Image (cartoon, rainbow, N blue to C red; front, side):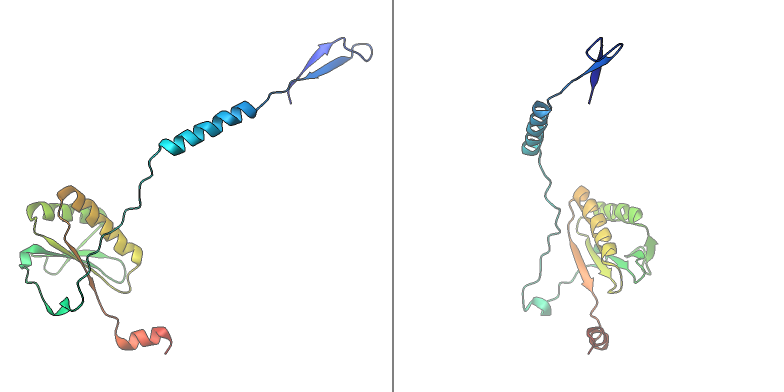
Length: 167
């Protein structure tokens, strides 16, 4: 607490009397609460970004769509999380970083608006790595407007699935 000494007050020779100062904080707290309410009411919260997935209809697995090889870009994520692109330019695959991947997808989508991107993720790869690749695709597709993507999943062999289940 703050205070002030006043000379000559009570007590004896040279004694000083202390006066305390009281500051009421209630109005300041009221103003802070009003400001918080104002900012909460006027701010806009961004909805979480979701990935829209169109699933095939039941029984449609027997129908295949033929696509030209030049309209396909395959992004592979291996067990270690390494990302590589496979298309007409790099038939054996070329390892790329995530920054390079986003630029490469954007460039390919710009030159070919019919491009279909296939993301092939190994079952042993981390989920976060797949989401990083999907995020790079999403950022590239927001700039180009090309939104055709397909997830290619490998089936886990029956013996491995049974061993993991403990049976």
